Length: 218
Image 1: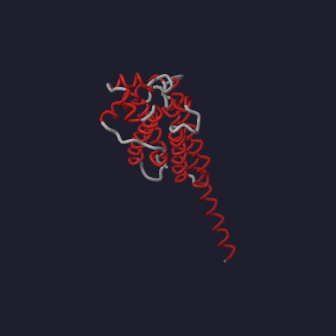
Image 2: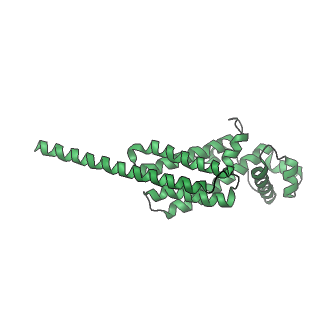
Image 3: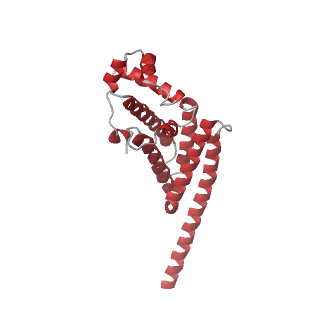
């Protein structure tokens, strides 16, 4: 489900776009609660009246900030998925490749959704569905991709891939060790090799059983 279906959005005017760009930079660098509307308005070069006329509240600015990042991430990821061979492990690994490139360019402090959830844990907040919605979407994506490789174990494999991916994003933000997303990709690749081998063995065993059954019938 897209964020636009879940949460009210506003129409972006040039002034609103300036506010959003300033807020996005400040929220990500300093934290959502640490940034007030006075600073956002000053950085955007607009009055507080203009800011409230366009957004109505700080909460709506947070909604637009997170929804905009989510939409840009999904579009960015789609390019990597489209370039990978359909139905292959390469599409799973493409998610890690996209995350590594995105994080290097846009997320030096880690995942914006994870960071936002540390400040916004109340489900009644209008931005909450965007935060959790992106993670539900990522889990569904990993599960769908896993289904092309190991249909019988897609749910388990999808959750494991999700844990590797999200853990890598958190490690990236904490900067505990170098290039955690590449490390997670390596672990995902090993996991996929095992899943492919297991699926092939199950298929082979099923064919042997079917062949034996036909012989018995003859």
